[in-house]
Image (cartoon, rainbow, N blue to C red; front, top):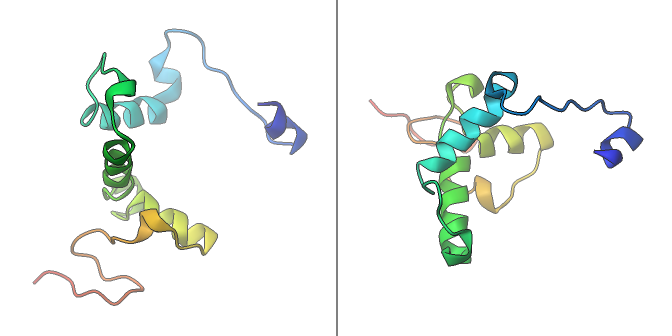
Length: 102
């Protein structure tokens, strides 16, 4: 928070127990709950399993991103390829020249 203020970036804190004020976060939490149910002891998850969940999350196409994955969008914005962008979303023809489904 303070680091963002030093960069002149405004921050916003939602009121407690007000999920409607943070719809995007609630949506993200709901998506992660598909992989990690409530009351899961995160200490019992292996690093490899946790990374699998993150990769699945980052490589799932989103309507709000014009059916691109978060990883594809992130790479496009930053012009940066990283480990999480290695697998494009199925059925899309992108800059990698993958064929589309008939």
